[in-house]
Length: 174
Image (cartoon, rainbow, N blue to C red):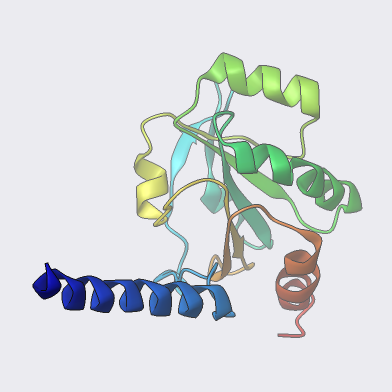
């Protein structure tokens, strides 16, 4: 019995150490993206609810946000009001990459909650999201006028991240 106490005690100490370290980490929600400061992956996808297609190359020359979302994503609902606020300000277009979603559910969601997106490419298979290194929704990328990824935010977009991370980059402060 005593021979199991030492390993159990060491395991418990390691768990406690990791827990405290994670809780105190200032960057616990930051997942580094290999795309930062590199060209954005190019794609062409069907537009949600349309026979048209959209290629992100068409936004070359303009800054834009790429917001990965799905109706199955609880955090996406939480960030939706923030996206509506950003869209209402008109400072930057938002491309809403609808990821692995049911088209009818996505259209119903937008009718009920409002549509903050300039265009909504539908990534039903999830292949474009893989090219962008998406771990889960929501994720928001900031792409500059030259088509370079400048920032990636993982999780629901909130006012503090918008003010401190996105706006300074868009306005050329960072």
